[in-house]
Amino acid sequence: MKKITSKKKLFLYACSGLGVNMLNVIVGSYLCSALLVGGFSEEDIGKWTYMDKDLVIAALWGVLVIAAKVIDGLIDLPFSHFIDNLKTRWGRRKPAILIGYIPMILAYLLFLVVPSPTAGILNTIWFAALLCIFYGCYTLTMLGFYSTFAEVTENEGDLVFLSNAKSVCDVVYFSLNFALVPLFVSLGLNIKIVALIFLPLALTMLIPLFMIKEDKAAIMAEKANKERTTVLQSISFAFKDRPFIKWLFVLCIMNMGLQLFLSGINEYFSTTDVNMTFVMASCFVPVPFTILIYNKLVRKRGLGFAYRYILTVYSTGMALMGLCGFIPQDFLLPYAIMCSIIVSFAIGSFFSVTYTVPSQRALLRQSESKAASSMYFAIQGLFEAVSAGIATGGILVFLKQHGLVSYLTLIVAAFCMLACALSFFLPKTITMMGKDEK
Image (cartoon, rainbow, N blue to C red):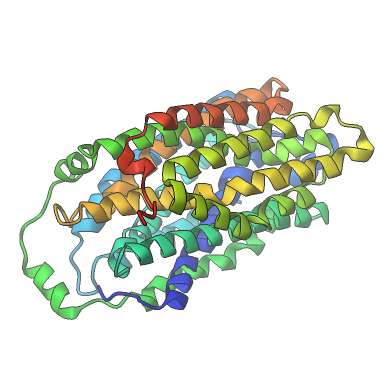
């Protein structure tokens, strides 16, 4: 695969997943919540839910959401092996992206269709099955994209630039999700209509199909090479990387906190009477500037120190936001905005670190196995999926059903502080990543 050396082209390449990532957040944060009325105020139910009532069996739905997340994580492994060993006249990555992209869009559209007007087994199974299909196809699409990071970049510096550029793009789609989506809903649009408005952004995933330039001679050589690795060999290769496995356990704890907040954010702000649009804009708009602080800390002290910095800052902002219920109404919005600005000093960097660690581990060990470059992302995706399933299908559903959503940000802060404590046990090969030896 030909290298992309221009910084402008690398930034454009980083924008590829913007639309697809946004659809994923809309499904996980809004459409899944729209199936249950619990956690919403009476005036918000008509806008944030499909039909102003429960459409799934809550207990069964919670179990199936966890199952969908686990399946999504498990399917990463065979999908990764499929991508790394795919041999076609068009290369490996572009066909893999297309194979996942088309059914993913169809599953997204079908998720807006309600088979039955009553909460029963039909609706519950229907939405759970579509969730599995959507997550699976989303995984295949994004694995195909992420696995190119180490292939389209010429050196580690370009790889870090691409990871940081992708994190900036992530800030953009999160800003659109958590600022514009509530804005459209506040204007009277139902969440189903809002979901359709953002669907065209998924076309950004077509960018790699035009920017990836395959080397024809390399493609022919790969097709002629009959040697193939098995799934177990690829998995074993990544699992033998002990620093990476230790990183995954820390990541899981952090991810449970993040996913709990992102999935329950609309319910939380519905209970606090805070204008979600202003709060989320304050949270995401400063992020491109706050990432500069994170990058400076990485260069001076290494990734470990910078990671603990963002976890501490994020936990502080979340804990303070948990006190919104005790703030007088006249001061509530300014207080919530202050908390969001504190959170902004951390949130963008969470994206960057999840791209940097697996990409750099894959790059460091590329000479040992070229057929496992996407397996790092696959295994990380497995751990993230399980932790997200516990957070959204277990903890969040429990909080919604028992009227405890107001404690959500305090629980998020606790998870992130636990991850911060565990990060002190990460090996130096991770904590010293990115440090400028000079």
